Amino acid sequence: MITVNELVDMIAGSFFGGSLTTAGLVIYVLIMGLIFAFTKNVFQTLVIAIPITFMFSGPMLGLLPTDLVLILCVVLVLGLAMTSKKALTK
Image (cartoon, rainbow, N blue to C red; front, top):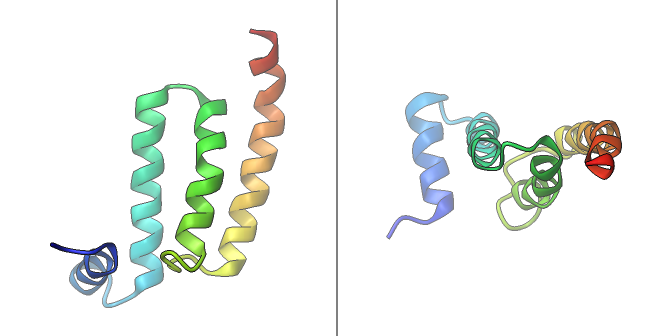
């Protein structure tokens, strides 16, 4: 059984020269792309993205640096603010 950390180590070693941050960011983008493909709704995707972002940054995986997480949180909140008016009027 391969753990998540072993998978990230394999991807980082194979494609990104051992950079765990780059591998974590690529996995994060792929997961967010899959979620967006399944939901087809920007508001739902942004709401789901908040806990996923913290999962990738916290003690669970620790793949994303704190600076990047702060920027992602600001982008997610701005995206929610922009789409919330559309979500409430439907």
